[in-house]
Image 1 (tube, rainbow, N blue to C red):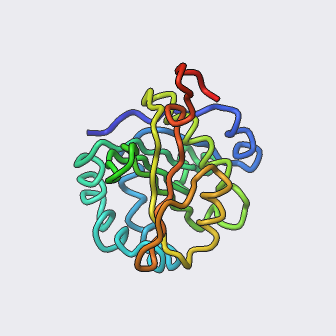
Image 2: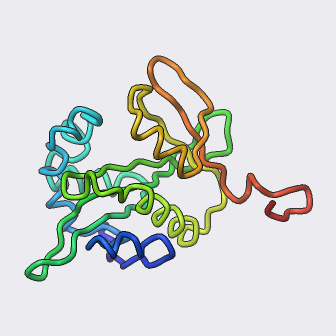
Length: 190
């Protein structure tokens, strides 16, 4: 089921807009149409092969991927040209509990060629997290996994509040503590 795309506006989106990009929440046929080609970009295939082989092999596969699980999707779009914008990045939060933790959502990000090298990733991550916590009314932890060799991603995740909790078989698991984790015994956020 498609959800209408909504323009996201918060303290972190200003930097992105200054560079000609906008953040949207939601999913539609335009996102489905663009993801297969974006997922075949060389750097995406090298780092997340499953995108081109499974998740986004076609618009129909992208649609199934979105419909099959509870996902909150954010896109980083270029400024519209001729009435259309292009997806330059995607973030999603998916309902997926991490064993032995209180994390109920996982996080993933992809930046495509149109946004690479522009130093937008931190603002994009912060904008999406800020909106996700508010829209989903979620205060819990969020987790992710990445390769131990993915130094740029590890730096980004640490810069945006993720902490390493495990390293096994070349993979690192990180958690971003939510507001619920920051509450003291009186229920107040520290």
